[in-house]
Length: 283
Image (cartoon, rainbow, N blue to C red; front, side, top):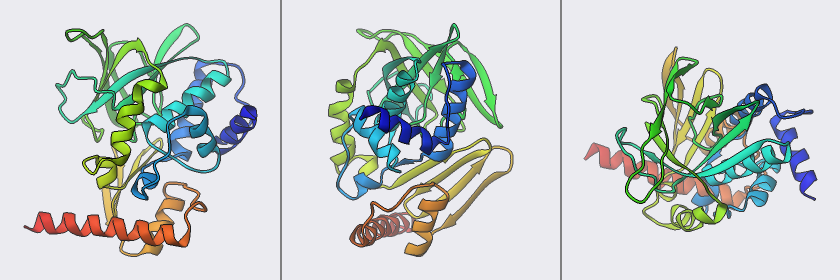
């Protein structure tokens, strides 16, 4: 039953009684989600990308898995709605160019209204803010990381929206449109992102986990800890044992879904990509 899914989801978040919708409750749920449920592309790397139906994503999270924005934000929206929150889904996009005004659909963005105010809420960006940001123009700081919410003026044929800008994020700009969206709006791009050889999710394994002090990032075999106040540390994972221990401890991923064959295949794929990247840089 769907209620059983949400019970398991909340247990994974460490939330026993979420209570009625409040601003404080929303903030606590986002913090718990970012700390306990990692952004990961492991199933894509293994050639078995999961669909983005929100109920299915919620089941996966309750069972100890992660995912990327369509899975994480899709499931979180469903959970919040089950708790009585007023949630809207939006078509968004993430960009390296901080001046971009595009909205590609490569990101599922959420806004939530509670206690008479609107917030941008995100547990699927990887290194997003630790807490929701007010949906109003301004600059914000969380744990030494800087963010700016800015109104996004419409392009021809498109409506207005919002932009999140931060030099501290792996993608310094995220844009989304005001108009509500549905899961179907993301299906085609999800297919490309999860199966195309040109997709960054197919080319490189990526995991993120956010907490109050910073963010843990694993790309291939390179594990980084980014702390706005203490700086960045980095180490290479040289053995399968180190790699799977990092998944379980740093990223809190339950790896019992990975068979011995899965583990061998994933390590081999990550190693090939790592060695190719090292070779290309040396050249």
